[in-house]
Structures are given as structure tokens and as C-alpha cells.
Image (cartoon, rainbow, N blue to C red; front, side):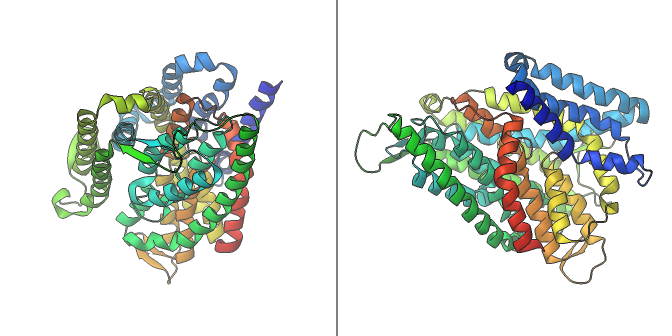
Length: 481
């Protein structure tokens, strides 16, 4: 019965929250002209349903057959798309998505996964509510300077290790995803890819610091909630006879593999270069397009992206070559988490292309003119789609409103409050689902590997609805009305 309830909840929540439902309804009414038929979004919805439901119903089967599910749903999109638009267009669409979106995405995750796996923290600092609050606060602020993915990969293992003595600890990872893997990336373009795209289109590098009051407000609310939840769980663990294994009094910490922080800096530098090099004349042709290696048709792997990939892979290689294998053993390092993310997200990137086409075709026609509308629309879409194109669609929409006052960008003048709303929606609401932002699923997989029973897709969604939804309502009332 419980599984049936979970299944119905998954279906209902995905139907209600999937933004393509609304767009498809507008199409059926004849009010919009779509770039692709709405039914091409079915494979994307089908893959999301598999991710949400099959771990509940057939966990072992799903773990063994994830690649087959990805191939099935990908072909279910590619074949009809090729019939409608031609084989060449289908090939270009898929290759463009793989070469210029998925490749850099997975290489970045791979590099940070490898380097962070070669850093370990040991000592007498045991997980307690106060310690955990401090670590979450530090990780959240760190995310803006080494990226949400970098901060997540660097800090998740030490936090898991410090709380390994505890039985009730999955809420720690959930709040970690909320804050470190998402919200903390809002202060600089390094923090999250949407803000990097804004920087490339004329938004000043440190303009995102305008989001600091909003971030501090959310941190205060979430850390207060976390402390109350964690204190209750902590007392229950102590009452059941659990206690940390601390051999000495006081606090003694040792950081092993600290030289790998240099390689994290290398990776962050590679990300910054990928965002700044395309604007330099040396990397542009006469038409202003980025130079690169032509793969097929109009699909080009730009030289800035290639430089980013080479630097990241070099950092990962040097990290493994210069770090003793005992550190990876101490971290319980395996390739399972990165393998699962690589397999699932190539399917997500491919099958979500029609949804992105619909969004690009209709974003400017949705009648969204108020900051609170931008915050919620950008956010809900970013919960299920790639938040970078979602951010760009609504930044373009805001710039096309013809308003005279605000931030001057290459896409037009955008009112400050509206730019704040778009940025916050894209960055913050990626925390709503496991697929909302790159590190979310990776953190979940690492936690699963370390014996923490994480919620299902729908279970996590319930957490975000119960915790994040009220916080976002407060954000709307305080900052965007």
C-alpha cells in the first residue's frame, strides 16, 4: 500500500509541477506557435518517472538496467524527431546537446569528484547540531567561490564521516543539498552556471552580491529549522545508546591530501576561462562566432570549452598521480556515484531538448512582467530543466520589455529587482528536485554509497515542498513584491 501511495504521489506531483503541462495546454488552445510538438516531451517525462518510481518498485532491476532505460527513452525522442525534422536536424540537435552541454557538465563533475575523493578529514570533531550548522554555513558561503559542485564534492564526505556514528542523519544531507549544492552559489558567476551566462552578457562580476541579503535571510531560516530537526535527531541517537568514537578530549583535525586544493583551484580557473575566453577577439571568427572544432553540420566544440576540458582532466590525472591510495580507501571512494550520474544525465540532457525548445519559443509570450512572476516561473522550470537556458530565456524576456531603468546588459535593460528574481529563481529552486542542479544527484549517490538511506525522488520532493516552499513564499513577500 505504501508503494502504491508513493507511486500515485510521484505521478501527481510530476504532472502538477511539470511546466510543460501548462505550455502544452496553451498550444492545444491554439494560442501559441511551438517550435516542437508538445508530445515530444513524453520521453523526458517518462525518464523522470522512471527515476522517481522504479527505485521504489524495482530497485535492483533499476540499478542494473539504468543504461537500457536511458537508451529506450532517448530513442523514443530521437526517432520521431528525425521523422518530423529530418535525420540531419536530429543528429545536430543530439550532438549539440552532447558536445556543448553534457560533455562539459560531466567532465566538470568527474574532475571535482576525482579531486575531492583524494581529500579526507580526520580527527575528533564529531557531528553534533552545532558542528553541523557551522559546516553547512561554511559550505554555503564557500559555494560562491569554488562553485556549488566544487563545494559539494569537497565537503560532503567530511560531513558524512563526522556523522557516521549517528543513525538519524539523512536530513543532514537533504539540507546540505538545499544550501551547499544550490543556494550558496548565488553570489558570484563562479557559483552557478546561470550567473556565469549573465556575466558573459554584460552583468558585472560582483553584481550578484546584491543577492547577499536574500541568501543570509534564507540561511538564517533554514539553519534555524535544521538545528531544531538535528537536535531532535541527535538526542534520539544519544538516548538509543549511540555516541561518537572520540579517542581524545578536545578538537583535533587532520586534513590529508590537502595539496589537492591546488587542483580544485585549477578546475575553478578552467570554468572561469570557459566563460571569459569566448568574448575575446582571438577566439572569434569574422562573424563573431566562437572558433572551434567542427563536429557535424553546425555543431562546433569551441576552443574555450576544449581548454576547460583539458585543464579539468589534467587536474584529475595529477590528483590521482600525487595522492596515496590509502586516502581514497579512507573515503570509501568508488566509481558508482559518477557512473550513475553520467548514465542518467545523458538521457536527461537528450530528452529535455523539446521542453527547452518549447520554453524558448514561448518564454516571451507568457505575459510575465513582475519580479515575483519571474522568480517562480524561472524557479519551477529550473527544478526540472537545465537552469542555464531557463535563466537565459527569462533574462532575454526581461530585456525585451523595453524598460528604461535597471541593469544594462547585451540583451537590453533589465530592472534590478527583476534580475534579482531571475537569478534567485534559477539558483535557489534547483534545490527542489534531485535533477534540479548538477551536484544534487551526485551528493545523493555518495550518501547512498556511505550507508545513508536517502529519500526517493518523490520523498525528496516532499521535503522540498515542506521546507523550501514556505521559505520561497517568504522570499516573495519580503523581496519580490
